[in-house]
Length: 298
Image (cartoon, rainbow, N blue to C red):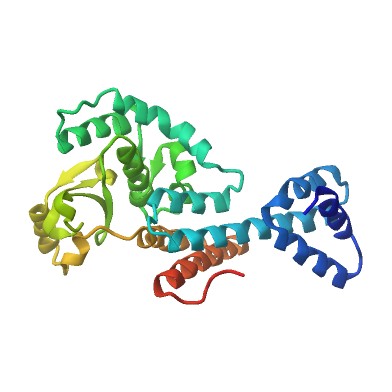
């Protein structure tokens, strides 16, 4: 839609007739993110608090719809890249966030790791280099996933504060490892989220029998073998299955973080209840894509 038409619609948002306002609002929301620059400008330029609040709510609705649509497309894609899925979650809370802004934070870490690597290193030796730079030089630390600190659930704030939960730390760690030539996969273990390194030669499956080792970013990149993990779970009388050791779908990884995030909001505050309900809706959308249910946002 032409800019002058968008501005004309925005001017009608101040109409006292509720029916006109609703129709105009729906038309603007349908136009999507292209209307955001003019809407934001209208908020800045107006002295009418009531008008500004109405426009801010529309901006929020447009951002929400955008995240819904992009999340659905990501969940339906073949790759389901963990990092991109968590970028969309972070963009929900921070609409101005871009991949370039995230890369500005990550690229120095990647470059420092690349400077230490050579073609003769084993995968374990590469992990040691990543651990040293990621945890020691840049100071990333783990915060329990049951924390009420919502910042640990969003990768943009994790990159700023250097504090994340087991999922967000692993998502960033995995992305960095991939950019430096080491392919790791998210693995949904009970109690803790790990990254797996698998023998993929001759198109082998990324399942337990082909797992070479697992990395735990929550404990500064500690490395475990399958027997060690089996022994740990048996000693804790935890029921284990081969599926626990397989590479997880990117949707399942984001679901895990969303479920933890939902439980982190203090329910005594109305705003927190709203945010928790929205995160729940994102989780439902992801569930719908997995089950092929008709939950795509309109």
